[in-house]
Amino acid sequence: MTPYQRIFGTGPRGLALSLVLLGCLAVIDRRIGPLTITSNAAARYTFFGMLATATVVLLVWSVRSLPLSDRGQRLVVEGAFRYFRHPLYAAFLTFFNFGLAVLLNSWLYVVWALVLHPLWHLNVRREEALMDQQFPDAYDDYRMRTGRFFPRRTR
Image 1 (tube, helix red, strand yellow):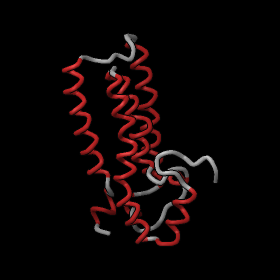
Image 2 (image 1 turned 120 degrees about the vertical axis):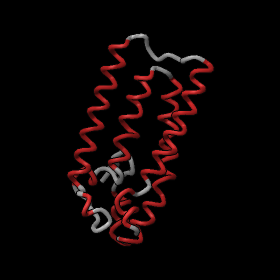
Image 3 (image 1 turned 135 degrees about the vertical axis):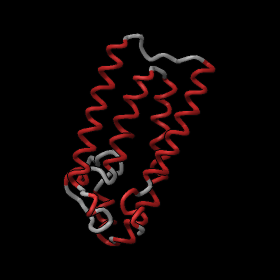
């Protein structure tokens, strides 16, 4: 595992893909006109604020659970990582992107947020393969107990 992979994983590639898709939808949105979610701006800002707060809480919890110096050095299965294999990615995929979609006030962006989930599932497969090489038996057991972007219902 290279130092770059150890620190960033597949995040930069996934972020680039997410932003390219967002840009494409912005062009489409301008051409066809917005497919408005609601005309209530206060509701949109409130919803975005709640999901942005949830994003920050999960991000802080994730960083506190896995200090940068430990990335790729040991398998962390406590804190946020007890519930999510990828809590940093989950923060954006599960909370922030849907809040942003509502803030931008178009159903096209909700579709964008939905489409990102399967794309990121494909994106993190390489990162999980690296973790499986680094921590062969332990990571396989961890993967069976923990969801990628959503907590597992059963333990």
